[in-house]
Image (cartoon, rainbow, N blue to C red; front, side, top):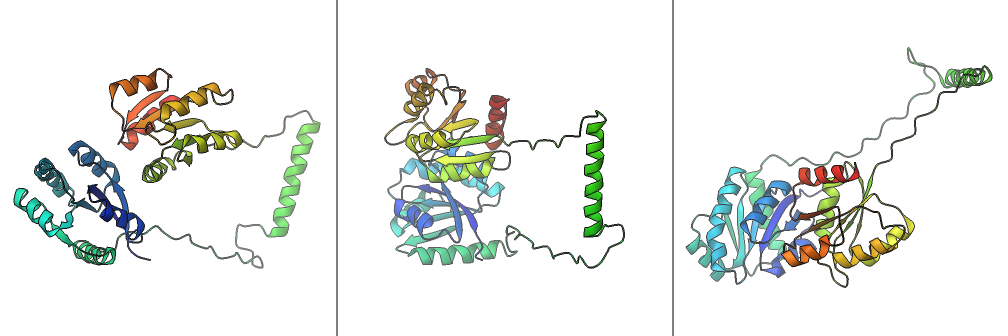
Amino acid sequence: MATKYKALLTGKNNSVIDDFFNQMYENFEVITTSTRYDDIIRHIRYFSPHLFIYCLYNEPRDNYSQMAEVKYRLRESRIPFVLIGTKEDCDEFERISVNVADLCLCKPLSAGSITERLVKYMAQRMPEPMAQEPEEELLPMPDLSAKPAGHATPDEEDILDRLAALERLTREIEGEPAEQEPEPVRRRHILVIDDDPMMLKLLKEHLHGEYDIATAISGKIAMKFLERKRTDLILLDYEMPVENGPAVLEKLRANETTKDLPVIFLTGVSDREKIQEALVLKPQGYLLKPVERDKLLEIIIRTLG
């Protein structure tokens, strides 16, 4: 199995970014961020990438200057700064931001060549193999022919089960209430509605340890899901094609079975008028992306009680 490195991508070179998602996924787990300094730092904090990649294409020169500040934060976590672009763009970047890039890859390069050079570079920086998810261990079948000390054989276990059942029946006859098996605690369920597949994946990774998660890339799909299944809370994006977040929330509030569902907006929309449009519908929260996992969990816990 190929070693996977976590890569945080930014920049306007969409063809390079698409290559990472479509052709290089076996070697890289990737998410993207804007070139805003605050966005980059938040994504570094909660994604913990192994490398940061600036995909250059007609970038504003102001962005080049602020990358020196990004580099300072990357250096603290020993995360390499990789530059990918044409030779002209790379030369211009390095002229303005001296000693920022740890590795520069000049186009034209195929996705395979970029993968090969990045994997080789990371292997030199991280000679120890990265920890892989442990494979599920198959336990050996017990030898039922032997009787380990202190353990009952299958026949003895059957006898013990019968005695326990007889004891419960005796208690019921004598008027004592039978011991009840405790009902399993149902995990709370969250439905995430967002048209960005990477955001859906990221939120699922953040929350699956505490909650059961379902995802939908549109309000239409979400409403179909809610016709058949129930959820305890919805995380809702604002900007989506066809129907935006407020339009989806209006439908939820107009439906008798979903009108009382807690809804928290989780979005990058910070425009004051648009926020007011959403708040009129009385959601249970309005959070701006990217949000830290601990803060998100705190608000979910407070909402669900």
